[in-house]
Image (cartoon, rainbow over all chains, first blue to last red; front, side):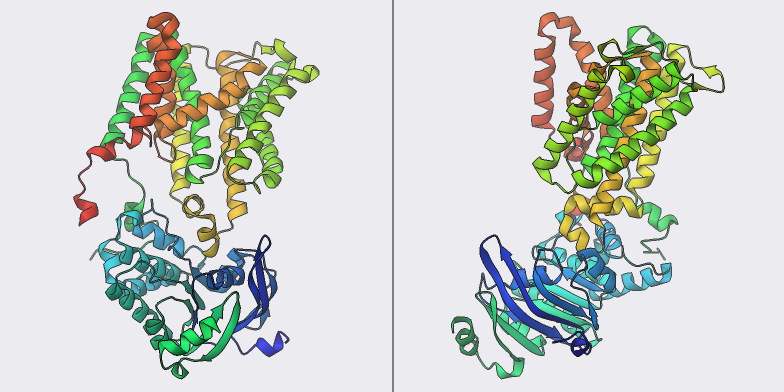
Length: 242
Length: 331
């Protein structure tokens, strides 16, 4: 497959593979997200979901090819991918705990070279999505609840004006109501045209939002299908353990 | 309506800058009073506080690298050595103005930090700590062995006091005043950098290198710049030591300096704004207080330091948090 063939995709990965020492955590994997598409990756623990995201964003060494908006970005580093608009909300949120909400959001807007107006527009957008962050603006990130921290993690990523938002288990450790609230917000963002790649364990919720799903197991993609084709948990289990 | 602007340098953004709490302001006031007391009392206390000011400048730089950026360095004494010997050689051998010698030494130290930091900062954690420690040891050894340049153990004497354009600060009291002013200036610069976009990037790296990179921050470059900044501060401190004391030898910039400054930083509070200043003054004054207990001086000092680290693990400047009302965070 060539770069030209992937030009229609927002992002496409070809034969992406990664190892931790002798362990092959991710076998050669192909995946793509179309512009404005919401794609979710499901799979059991240890399937290689996080490894796939980390390999895509160059947080770990990998082989294979990554094409973003028709450009081969395989050799770029993480911060350069962020410059292009690939922003990842990492598992565990990756917030800067000693910093306030305001400072975390400022860091999110770090790569933006836009005007003050652009920054403020992003900020207002984040506050409209997560009003609670506005109330907590001076509070340190570490002193907030898990749900608020996740809102901040997503809000901080949005401050970077992403073209593709990658999220690694944003509902991890959250109460169902809060998880639903955050994932619903992602759905709303997608409706505005933001491309989203979501790794999630809460399958029913993710499947409601996504248009397409990749099922990952033992380090390789077992299936790629439209979400409406998955009727029940049994269908998923079939792919997980086949 | 209150603006929620987060990037403007105007009022709302200024409000976002880190502020000192009342406890920290009180601590700074106590440090100021102690320094004033030394200024009035004179004698040996002047020397103690002169050195405290110099170490304070050193620690502000160290705090940049270890506190804000979250990296380990036990080798900043190498750059103080460059600063000290640079000033000594340029002034004694070549008759340079002290202020110019200080600046030239800082440039040399900055370039050296750039060259050394580029490969070294690829290391992380304990490996970086060991590499920087060995850097300090190597520099110490060079200052002993390269006698044609450094005069070995003999060191350099007759280094002129700080001054410019023929004016020299001869009085010990005025030296302390000048050093306190320089410490204040160094502190102001460091706060400006801490609150800048660059400073936020450094603090993000301290929180999570991967997280910072994922937001577009060039982690290796930022770490290198922080290392160079710390080296510039260390070099300035080394030069000031030379011009204040008038004599340097390899022991001054040996591994003991790394240990002393490390202690100061942790006693004051690593990563805090005023920690370097408070730590430098407390760790300079405490041994003098315990001098009265004679041969138990070191033991008493060690016990107090241990007590501080156990009961104030985040340093003296963070103690105020224990008494701060929590209503804001719970709101």
